Amino acid sequence: MIIEDQSIITHSEKQFINTVILGGTIPFYWSKSQDHRDNKPFLYHTLIHRETQQIHSEHANFFKEIVKRFTTKHKLSCNVFLRGGINLTFPREGKGHTHWDHTFPHQQVIIYLNQSEGGSTTILSEKNKILKTIEPKQFKVISFNGKYPHYQTYPKKGRRMVAVVTFI
Image (cartoon, rainbow, N blue to C red; front, side):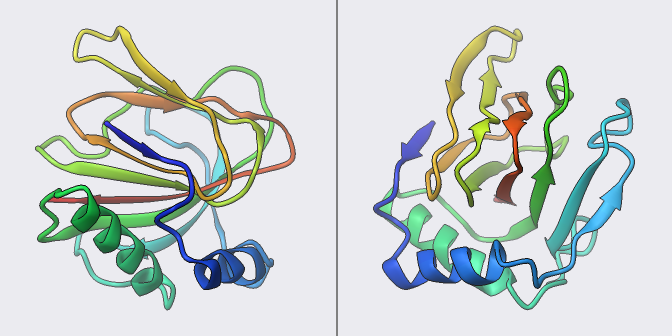
């Protein structure tokens, strides 16, 4: 597991996130659940399509470049981007459903795009014991092996926006 607070994202990328990604100009779509097993709606913006690995957003390459830089710095193999998206959640009770992004081996990167009050990410062991709970901080980047289940808590107020990118 790798946690990096801000050094990987450049000043101009931070400005782009603040003005464009958080600026209210990109489309988000309603999903009635974060996982087919729950009933917790959220908004999403697809960067890289899960089934086809095709680029779906003009902002996909922006996030791919950050992930490539991160994986190079931390000597992680990144040959194929499997999926990418921006998830937007709002305050509600409880936590998100514990899940894996794929049913096969992969790596995962989460980029916290805004500062939210609450909205942590909890990574569990394969036996569902808490390995680490990461508190959100704008521009923090985390990476972990996709074999570990994880879940989010919801922000206490406002919105929680993260970019999620998976790869092998």
